[in-house]
Length: 376
View 1 (cartoon, helix red, strand yellow):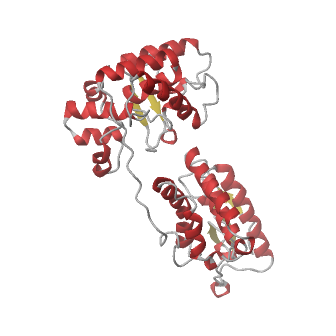
View 2 (tube, rainbow, N blue to C red):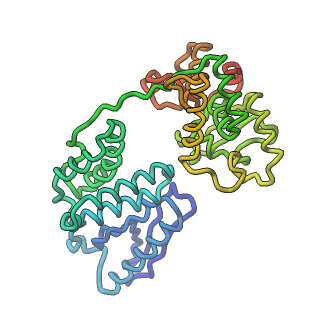
């Protein structure tokens, strides 16, 4: 005797969902399709709707198994069968999981691109082979296409490794061929800092000629926001009523922690002007619409401004849009001589990363932050 399987799933996704049923008076819970030789793992997904969809499928499969006489008591009937996946299917399965995860848009886009490029590179006869039969030579040859710079090569290698590391973790493969591929040491990018006079001159030029870029650079310098990942995406709703703080949720910044930054007066003045002109708190502060500019927007703006400022002699080689944040962090360190404060500001997980470039910002005590806030 058995009862109808029921799904137990809440909106709190930190709690695992499951399908429950009674068999001969004993209650059972199933969290995945392992007992039924099914590749169903609803709790791996990061949204309620995705989990619910897969739990409905699992519930249906359990009902079918029970109707056919399957018994959870008969452990000897459980046969462990290794799922054999083709290269094509395995790559796209992991990609789908990543796309449904709480990852940044840029990271997801990189993963999509590497799967597309790798699948287009492999012969069709290779794509239909089991994933554990992949020839490591294809990995080497594929990655060598991106050898124009060490950074480009290592970025592609890192993206492809995401998939093969997952294949190894789930025992679809024994060895990770990407880990055995050639490594190249990228050249460090120098974001040369600005002097005080030069900082005012560059910001002054941007304010007149590139107002959006000017505000982004102010946020990078005065609030230590990452230009592309944070400043570009700021909306009016992130700014409090008296325009003294910016608050970002864990999903809205690179550190994945709630982030609160103080707004210095010179940034506040620019933000207030924009706040007065906005009619919707959900609008982006740069685009003044619900959609933020794309990832290439700031790069394009900076490339145009950089050429003009270089011709005018107000911008030096190796000074970039990130130099504003780096300059602010160096100024903070010069004031405090405290690497632990700087590590907090940078939101780095370890001191080595902080020492590597000594630049950035994270959360810190409000009063202490006001003491070290960089001034123009």
